[in-house]
Amino acid sequence: MTQVKTTLKKPKEILTEIKKLLNPEGPKPLVIFDLDSTLFDVSPRLEKVLIDISMTNDFIQRFPEVNSYFRNIKTLRNDWGFIKVLKRAGVDHDHYELFDYLRHAWAIRFFSNEYIHHDVPYDGASLFVNRIHKLGIPIVYLTGRDVQRMELGSKEVLQKWDFPLNDKNATLVLKPQKEMDDAQFKCDWIKSLNLKEYSKIYLFENEPVNINLIKKELPEVEMVFFDSTHSGKEPPPSEINTLIHYLLDDES
Image (cartoon, rainbow, N blue to C red):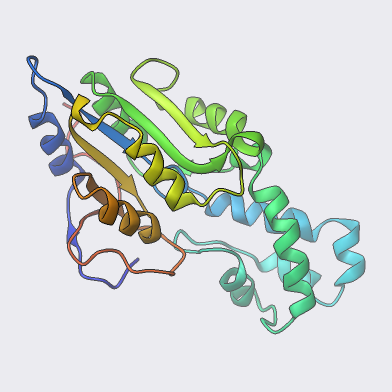
């Protein structure tokens, strides 16, 4: 988790804030969720990808000296990418040929409909989102995943874990092209909305690069930092509401 000082909140506190914005005579809030490392823990996907790569004939023939280390692979919630994972397993981080090979093989599998099915929701995530949805508040899953490689799997996994989807108040938005920058895509998509239609917009997001751009360009958006893992390219804002899970105190 991040070392930057943030304002740790309970999920119920955030939910209560959102509920207070409901006004039968006026506009509703809009709640936007990122997927990877915000609603879903992707570390099981990463682990499965690395193990499957190590079991291919091509990998075994190219890198017989490290293959046994892959039996020791165990990913953690705060892993970002695979370098630290392999280092913990005992793989020499200076093995440049190996890491170049893995970057290519990893990307093919990790960003695919097939491997998304290994993702698991963070504690309480499905219930939290459903609680908002049942209030009649529109929900958008705004992700840096792209349509061609990950749309089908994203829909299937959301439905598998009982997240609301496929009605006018629960929609999935992915990048049209994989080459698009995640932060700019998300910022531009929110800018394309008629912001006056909503009493407030909330964005739940784990990546500070995305948070910082949107906070700069759209300061009216209420950001919620989900402190799981991120690229490390930028720190999150020093003053931001932060969650580490979605567990509610009660079932009411």
